[in-house]
Amino acid sequence: MKDFNYYQPTEIRFGAGRIREVGEAVAACGRRCLLVTVPVFPEFESLFRDVKRSLKESGISVAHFDGVIPNPTTELVSAGALVAEKHRADVVLGLGGGSSMDTAKAIAVEATHQGTCWDYLFFRDGQPTEQTLPVVAVSTTSGTGSQVTQVAVVTNPEEKTKSALYHPRLFPKIALVDPELMLSVPEHVTASTGFDVFAHAFESFITPNGSAYTDLISLEAIRLAADNLPRAVEDGSDLEARTRMAWADTLAGLSIANAGVTLPHGIGMAIGGSYPHVMHGEALAVVYPAILRYTYETVPDKFAQVGMLFDPALDDLPVEEAAAKSATLIENFIRRIGMSLCFADLNVPEEELRDLAEASLVLPDYKNHPRVVDLEGVFELLKESCRK
Ligand code: NAD
Figure 1 (cartoon, helix red, strand yellow):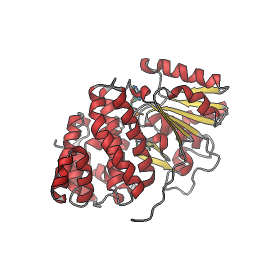
Figure 2: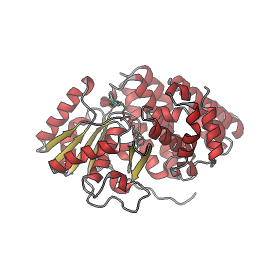
Figure 3: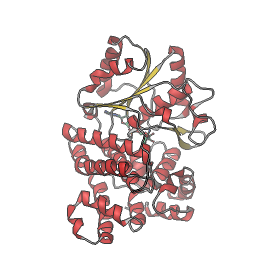
């Protein structure tokens, strides 16, 4: 077995109804809180009210920045950082999907450092210091795992680029995962965010950067998503399925925080940077079938192990055959949750695929894929993703 490191400083509080503890959780980190959310909509009205009440009852002074948009931008983070500075916030509470939690993390950096969050991307010389505000993350989608990762994804519209802050100081201090908050997620958002969970678990399992520890948790996350995502998509009020997806999401987040992601995420980030209307899960699902076909022969053993979670009968087949069948089973899973997509479905023009191929190789994710691709190779995979 190869050596490995595993690091995870986030305290996880998991379970239905745990949102009631939010005031106490935030009070463990500070007294002046910036609450970061999307603008209020009917399903969130009582949640926002209850959270603010819980914070006040714990003696916390709250300012509410409710401007978050999907695929958060640098301008958005700057606007939130100004509110944090004015309020003299000493803790940031990100409440929502990955977009809200990531905005909270980026604000925690920008409000306490020179320049903007874009100056602290993972490859820059300047990195978040100990001044970074503590973050408490409350997830309302089962998707990004951001509640337990050191990542904040931000889009720079001027540069048409989506990139990330990535630093251990960005791990939330506390992650509060309450599956009851996910009951209101609409069907397509459940499918799209849930596919992100599967993708995190799958990519952190097939990458050569994985370990015995991440293999253990990523396989469990894949098993949970395979069994429960179709259920949650079919019936959003199924609390058991929502709970298991929330756990899969958290496990997959723990796995990517230590093993990282691979080629689909590199392409997905490029799609999100150029076409912000595309949901993150959609950007992944559109390229997955082509990438599965491109990859299964390189790591047949890993594909076979995943395939057995969908169909235990694969255990009786030679590993190469099981790997090929596994790729087909994952494609069927994508179809079953309504995420079988082509670029035309996402309004991404075919003539822009070459630029997209170039952008897909900017982040290092593709280098962590088991079969490393070159520019022509990505272009071919993107062209293949124009059909379904
Ligand atoms: P999101 O946060 O953008 O939310 C999607 C939509 O669902 C929004 O309109 C939101 O208002 C709505 N929504 C959220 N919770 C809801 C609920 N309970 N009921 C009803 N509607 C609800 O989506 P996401 O997929 O969670 O996050 C995507 C972002 O996270 C992208 O920017 C992506 O790149 C990033 N990301 C971050 C990490 C990380 O580790 N930090 C990992 C993967 C992706």
